[in-house]
Length: 589
Image (cartoon, rainbow, N blue to C red; front, side, top):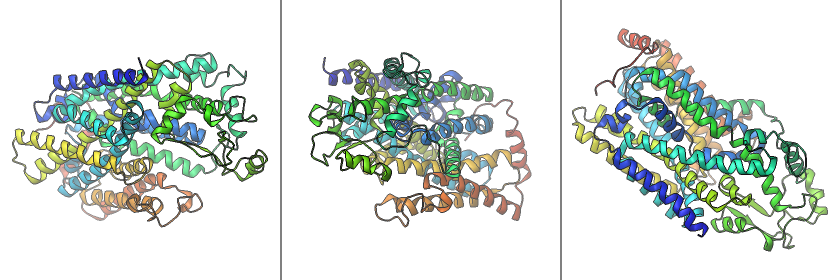
């Protein structure tokens, strides 16, 4: 059987599974649509939350980013994992105790203000829409490579599958679909990693193999990797970071941005009790750890395999001839995610750091005129089985896993958008007397509109996916997270303070990002070059979400202290929420 049909078999089987679950778990009420009926088991919810949280960025991009940047990019691991811990410890149980359906629900009621609810809805939609672009793009990459369709066709197929199970199943259908997607993606991620770790180190456990001995050279694997990349003019893979302030703020921004992601928060509204929310958080961390402990090993081994592919006899010897390149390079060239340009016309593939001035004399001596191979970071995980010459069925498994990762998070984000529109805008602000049947219809129509918008943005992204995702985390960090924290832990913050804080946080973060990445990511509209020497106090646009959060807290407290205290019943509510000793069903709406 050809690789194409093996991929079709794995991907097709997973699609049938997702659609079958959606038919079985069709939502019949608004409670089932928004919170899956509120009766999801903690283990089930933990697995679904892990799938919801581990997006295409985790499955496809994270290992590629770490493979390219080494230790310096470990901030993604620390930030995303730390953010989940913040969410589990500081937000999830208390929000479950409050007993509402959505994040704007909590903010609107806690700050006794339609204005606060409206600002929260706007922030939620901005965060979710920008984040979902990356998921659709990731699905397009996976489809275009493994099903041999265009990137555009891949995005349309992804949209159709999400429509099939999300619009009709709502949170109920999404929950059980995400359980299946977690099983698919974690198997797909770990099996190739086990094969590759055993090949390179003799240890089948990837996280241990990374610190083990490279079989061929007898050197520690990371020492071997440091040696080969430095021989090509790159920084040592394990090199330290010079700008500690930016690394700290970037990590913090990712942490609080992750903790403020609305599509993850709403998963904790689906369990019966506060204790179940805490257990869900624990189970989720276990399920996440299976991938996040494996990712650094996948990254380091993939980087070493890539260098060994181009320089089979070592970086000091000749590179492979372009005509003799392996089949996986040819395949990925067709997608445009690997590009080759023979700058010195010698018919060989020179891959090195041509931006390193200190390495220029060595490159000139060897007759090199610039780096000739450009490899998109997003292909590292997807191409790993092919680079390591693993069996065809492993490649099919990776295809199904990559698509599952993108679809699971896309569905959660789209549900968050749908709930915000149908429940927080239509039901609460525009038409409080709407019937449950009509609210369900509004929820499904909102979901459909969100899928169409996400598809269009995936086809016509306003910038690189990494830029858009950076904005999503920055917005979540600077808007919703501070409002949720102050809503739970401060009885003094009032509606005026909360609204002012969210507005200042969102606006300051957006403006700072746009100044360096272009207004709405339109090329050529940036005011400053996105380089370290141009950053204000050395703070990168990706790290500014932490500063936006600080501004949010400061403005909210300053305005609250200058205005009247919240009503007594609101202060009592905060006191009650901070004592999570149980919660009943979601409050009637």
